[in-house]
Length: 127
Ligand code: I3P
Image 1 (cartoon, rainbow, N blue to C red):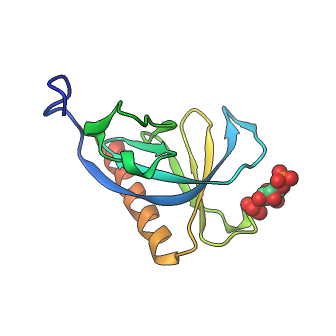
Image 2: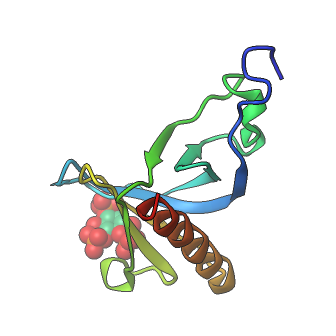
Image 3: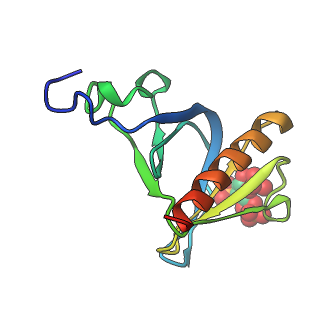
């Protein structure tokens, strides 16, 4: 890591490949566009990458920077199989009204993501 960031990288909690689509921006509905995304839960944020190789914060901003990131403070999670023809889908809504669907073919995997993100959201409420 560079001298600038050494020792200040927040703890990496979880990382993996999920299917993602953004469905609303500031409360305004968007057209779905599902894509695989490398998702990293780090500190209070969920960070999305196109490149699965750059999950390590020490490499930011290396050859592959995050595509976007989401502040989990005040965010809401809910299962959303009603919002997609896909199975194993949940919706993440940010406090700013951005909405994402996250999906995996593997039920155990998506349940683990849900649980872990919900834990972070709950932890932030009590801070
Ligand atoms: C959408 C695309 C999405 C689908 C969405 C379609 O069509 O097929 O994959 O969402 O369904 O509208 P287009 O490519 O023409 O935009 P799911 O895969 O989540 O079902 P929806 O409109 O019912 O959300």
